[in-house]
Length: 99
Image (cartoon, rainbow, N blue to C red):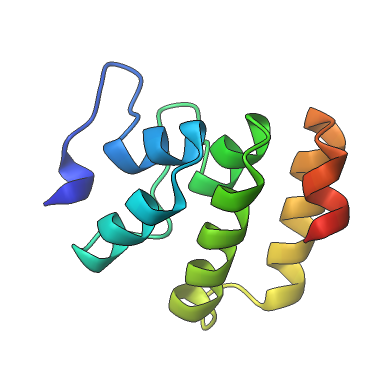
């Protein structure tokens, strides 16, 4: 399973795809069964990681997939609030204004 492979900090391969901004690879991981709600040992979600590194394309890709996969668990307005909060803290305003 894609999400069972982790490094010493709990990062999965899809965390790294988000960190380095590879939306096509992110999508491929989801097609192969990656979970949208996976977090590392620090509690960072995929959106956190993409946002912290200013990877707009990864934020958009994960946001689109999360809306489709987790909508019953997390209302859209809460996802928007999460993105705003992450970006205000991290200072990546290009992501904040584009989402």
